[in-house]
Image (cartoon, rainbow, N blue to C red; front, side):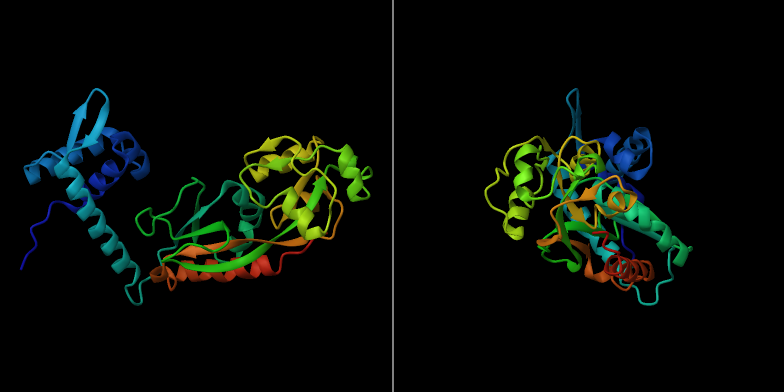
Length: 297
């Protein structure tokens, strides 16, 4: 029996536009113009004989019909994407999309990505640094690298490496810090978005009697590390993220050795994509690269 379906491309346009409730955001995601998305949606509405969006001065909203249809279309597209990923013997596409936090991308992945390209020149890697919860496979992302404790239910997760903590400073300040007592005369730089910061380091290192709460705060690890490199104070270095700055001499470890934290870097993906050649190659490479990473302190 032949299926009576609207053009499948219009369903992709509708899913993106419905999710964002914006033709412009859908167009940005799909690499199209807003007018192309709008034209495709009009064609779908004409084919269905139903209004999917209410268009007004305040923007775009789904109608009740559109909201109900969106739920079913999304489920159908996800089913198609999963079925496609599971096709046995599928020919390699040569493309891999990796979602990664900006700090890990800038501090570790990009500086090491050339080694992956040298080993797999036929695989083109795209990095997605938008900080959001990836929905596999709908977001078009093959795998993600996440910092945390491994709590991503329903997905394949594997620990790549645990994070080691050590205070780091600019070389010009290193001689001033010889014992934990010296921290009282220094500015402590904090990462407001991380639960593993000065107090955790102090507890793990057995350091007591210092005020770990004082000092300015930054919303990213990368900003705190840069502030330390500029001589604004002392930050908690996080290995392997800090390896590059330590190896280059922009930062110097003090009060070592590093202590092992509970936070780790995890590879996260949908189970059905594990056997894709590109995913398998990247998994093997990054596991080995992080395992073999030299410890600069």
